[in-house]
Length: 66
Image (cartoon, rainbow, N blue to C red; front, side, top):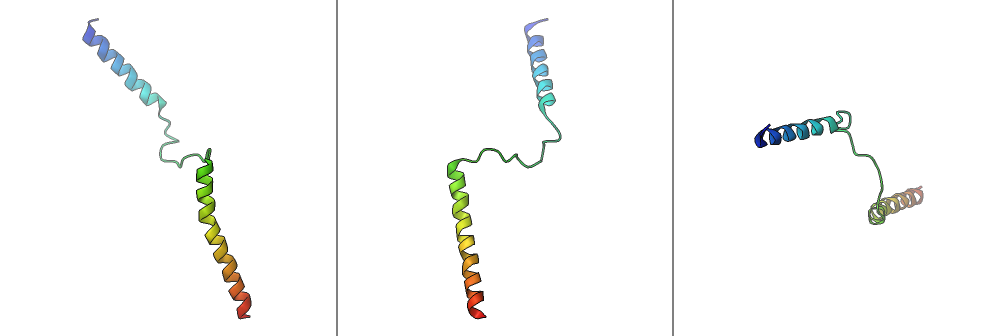
C-alpha cells in the first residue's frame, strides 16, 4: 500500500467513525437542562422579580376596586 492509499484509508476510517457517533434520537431534540451558572441564575431571577411584583400590584388594585 502506497502513501496515498494509506491516507485515503485513514480518511475513510475517520468518516465512518464520525457517522457511528451520531445518535439519531438526540438530533433536533432540546438540550438537556444541566448546570446553570450563578450569573445565569441571577439573570433569570432578575427577570422573574418584575413579573412577580406586577402580579402583586394587580392584586392590590383589584382588592381596592372592590
